[in-house]
Amino acid sequence: MFVKSDSDSRTRLATWIRDIANAGGTGGLNWHVHAARSLQRWLPTRELIASFLSDIQTEQSHLLLIGGSAGWMLPTPWLARFQRIDAYDIDPLVPLLFGLRHGRELKALGVEVNYHRADAIAGLPSLLKQHPQACIWFDNVLGQVGVRLGDEEIAERQLNQLKSLLKGRAWGSLHDLYSGSVDTSMALPAYDAVEWIRLDDKPEDTSEVKLKQQVLMHQDAAQQLLTRLNAQGVWHDHATRTVFAPGTRTTMIPWAFKPNYWHWLQAAWVKS
Ligand SMILES: C[S@@+](CC[C@H](N)C(=O)[O-])C[C@H]1O[C@@H](n2cnc3c(N)ncnc32)[C@H](O)[C@@H]1O
Image (cartoon, rainbow, N blue to C red; front, side, top):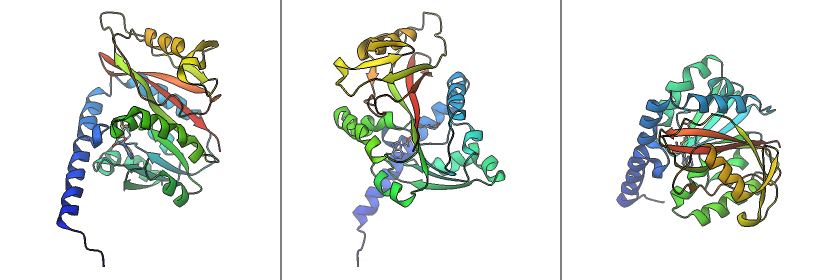
């Protein structure tokens, strides 16, 4: 018989407390307090996300929602398209807060929501096997893989492999591509979504991107995005450049995470 030691229990308790506080730097109470206080400033971004999601046509009635947190930026009507949602997050507060934000409406519409406290990135192969008919939505979580691992290179390699793991499945992701400081003395940037298509599988310094209708070197395209937001200083690259295969039509969405710290989010949906 396997008996769990006191030290196992202590480690699990410590992880639980740390995940309530900040989920390894990617969520937790810090995130919920910031999100609740920023909902108004985030409205244009939330509308762009809702518009992106409303265009997705899914045949599947079962969704695996990964890193959805309380669904602060998710529209309830999109969630209500599914009959069953399995929500995976490492944050112990998710069942309570997702329930408060979306639960009552989803329940009234007959949507079954199951919560799982789990590392769904490490556990993805087994989740996919457990739920062979479900589609998958990574909800602003892949851009934090580098933060959790503390190593951007390993993160980039892991993230690059995701699409092979997901081959044959319907899936999508919204994630950070870049983030950094902006010059707040300038006029607020426009909240326009921009189309971005990576054209090849080359290394970043020789890769080309189609930004709107223009073919540009990756670095020049990235610089154009940053300039649109009045970027200043060095911006953080979230190692998500190769999450989607070359040729995937993606939508870039600006996000005023803080008044002086913005993100470019990238979203796309891959059909099975
Ligand atoms: C930026 S928040 C996402 C917020 C969410 N999109 C919303 O609208 O509120 C990132 C979420 O991913 C979760 N997370 C981070 N790494 C995870 C992992 N490996 N497995 C499951 N959830 C994870 C965090 O706990 C956090 O709730």
